[in-house]
Image (cartoon, rainbow, N blue to C red; front, side):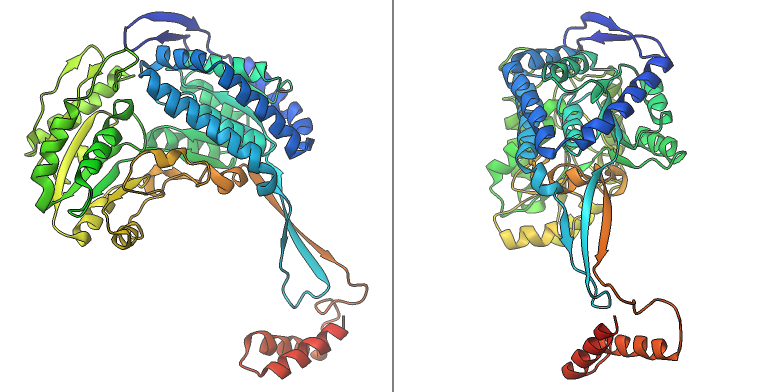
Length: 504
């Protein structure tokens, strides 16, 4: 199935331990166990399923420092980043579904057309079965656990493949689920790389949830299409930040620095393109340069930026910067690399023929471009293959809503950045090459279910549409069409409905 995985701390280069890659037989056995467990798990009440989630949440709270340490060993990210964005965000989402899953998934009564008298209608939300989740390395706890607990709350069993880059966190997740007492086979995980992910899809799960890069996402989609497996793809972003001259400039600067440099820029909703109105561009840029001087980089608890998790991602950042400089951008900071630590890089005079404005950089870069008016800002923001997140900065709420309504993005923030991904109440997902589907919120929970539509007929007599077909039936249907959709008086409508209703 592939060579074993070696856990390496990107901040220190320390080789921590080796993990065995799952074999084909182990993968098949895992899915067999998940299918067997799914029959009992889906029959549990939603309340009972959520009681397991509650126990899992308690385990996380009691052992939060352990998971922070695991995340730090895998990624080198600052402790605060791991605790806030991986652990706290995950706990918030679990609690949301604990409190709301029963209400979201309850049977929904629906209206029935007037031509179906004496009928009632409702919709059930039923579990899909076994869900395969393939998660990334940049937020290895949150982006593994959140889709997992959503699928579990909806009544599915889960097989998780954590990223091969962050196996320590993956191991800890499995340990926490076991500690929470979930029934055997309801949650399982498999260590390994892309070959393991391919084999998981070959096992024909009932849904595949993938978070990662666009090119890999396309391969997952192609593989799943062989078996018509429903998929959800949370892919990359190239998120725009639009700063108008009437914004709170100091707040916008702090938001830009945080949005661009959180997790060293290694997040799908990072601010990757900044558009600033011409009248404030110079002042904004100067304040950015002053603000990044305050950023501490290292491995201590009180630093803001850790290392790049993958060395090959450093090469991507350098390539984008070099491309921008060759095409006329101005470099306002030096490019400083110390081991896997990459210092913030600020660029001005960037244009849309540069990779850094068209592709996902996924690193600590701050490219700044000016715009003249609202129309141009919207045009620039939409000039991308991605559509995951964006932010608009202005004190004018009416303008903000007007601009937001024209942005081609699945998510948007006004006067803030990044953390809207952490709201459990809102669906999250992208448009264009940023993905397919939504998770979080009611929509996210329902996305892990199938809908079953039911109609109940209480009529004991004949039906209008039943055989035999004759001239009388034809005339009745013509009258029904006129009454429902034609320009006839109210009294005639009532008479027609009453006459036809009596026939049934």
